[in-house]
Image 1 (cartoon, rainbow, N blue to C red):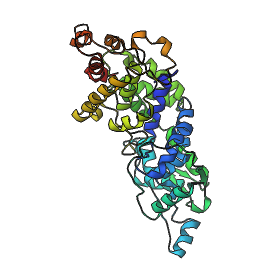
Image 2: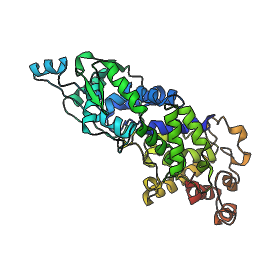
Image 3: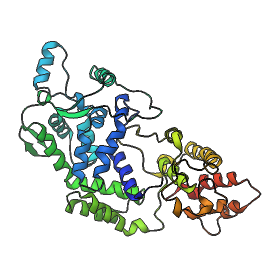
Image 4: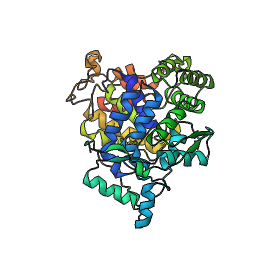
Length: 401
């Protein structure tokens, strides 16, 4: 929670979710999920959108998650050899479909099934090498038709598996392909790279990305004028994410007091830790996120985690937050952080870890009206301090940002 560039951290979380992989969907992805965020996402959040998408497309985690690693062109050398041996593998359209629908153009972006198939053919040969023995076994099960699915790991590993991108010409579908009306001559690996860059610069992509950004940072129902302005910047700069981020911050709608966003579980947990002056929740962090139904690197689908109040504000979810509020108030408000936050010096003394002496200090990080009963409740010294802290963390005001 104590970070020097919180806006960049939020951008990293947004783009990790937009281009998500899931350690819960396929166990072979779990050891790669951390390196995916670190290597494919974070270096590009203020760079060019097309570089971000290409880094994602070439990372082993994405190639495994959406099955492109085992996609083989039906007319390729490998397919013909496999047919002779009776071990033929075919074209897999999963990644191509999600690249169009979820990563670039959007579901209403003007493509059809022919475009999905053409992009899938361009992407054949984009695969991986260097998997550890255990991972190769899981990948082999996937190639034989198994789903390779399992429960999310208690703590997704980031072990540096040695897996890396490789282009295999023998897997690549020969011949020209037509995508969105444009014909791409046979050019091996560069076919898909060129197609991805073109998709990233498409006007539909500009609008789709602008809408998602405004939805995440401003309001569940994005103001059309704000989307238009951000889409214009995206299109005019060729997807320069630094320029887009600056335009996002400059939106008047982003500073409108009536524009609020319900905190996702991750947002809520980070805010609670920061409010208590703690830098981390220790080894329990991953378990806490799972209890809150936003497990680390494990969304249930390629769409990523939801971004609206309806996704997180059901009764069971709010009960989970109330229970965790009591747990955090009993532990983190009494036990000093093992690794103090870098921003500890700026944290009011009455709100530092181990010294939350006055629960009213939590009002500093909430938007609470002067007449709100919460103010009196937090000041009531007849109620144990930990209960008042839990009340603040579980209360309505703390659920919004």
